[in-house]
Structure formats: structure tokens, C-alpha cells
Amino acid sequence: MPETHHLIGERQFRLMKAGSFLINASRGAVVDAAALIRALQAGHLVGAGLDVFDPEPPRPDNPLLRMANVVVTPHIASNTDQGYWRMSQGVVEQVLQVLAGEPPSFLINPAAWPGRVATPRSNAN
Image (cartoon, rainbow, N blue to C red; front, side, top):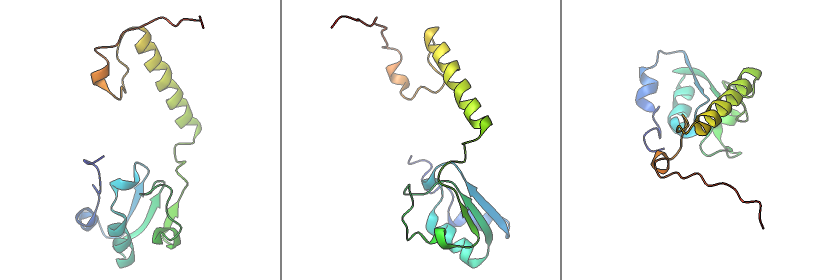
């Protein structure tokens, strides 16, 4: 998404307190990886926890994968009992909204909703 691409970069790292950690479990491109590497190498940031990369999956030669002060996970940070429960609840809530004729809370294309016409499925071949 253009509005969040490299939202965290050189300037934001400089604004962070020296000795801080960065944790990114949102989207890889939110963090400027080159700026993150420089902040870690300079010692301004003392570590990073990354569940996402840009590109995903990370290339084997990505320097972040070899840094002792970086912990990486394979994009599974939401794989918890609570995470699964919340995802399941969200799906059920949105299905109920659609069945009630309401747009779902996380409708990807809102422009498609006003023209929505429900048509019954036919079992005929």
C-alpha cells in the first residue's frame, strides 16, 4: 500500500530512543529494511523482531537473517489460540452481517456493495 510503504525509516529510527527495539508483525514494506539495518549496525536500535519481510519470503542473502540482534519468525505471529479464536469470531460476525443484508465490517471493495443482488443458486446442470 503506497500510504504505508516505508512508513518507518531513517527519520523515525532517529526519533526512537537509543537502545530501542523494533517489532514488525504488520507488513514487511512498512519498514525500510535498509534503514533498519543501518540503525541496528550503528547500535541506535539494539534489536528487532520481524515476522514479515519485503519481499516475502525474505531472500536468503538478506542481512537481517544473519544479525545476532534480530529475531525472525516465518510470518506466523498470529498463530495462537487467541488469534485463531478472534479470526473465527470475525468470520462469523461478518457472515451474520451479510445474511442480515448489511455490508460486512471488513468489506474489501465497498463500491461493490450497493449494486449487490442476491441470486439463488441453481442445482440444475
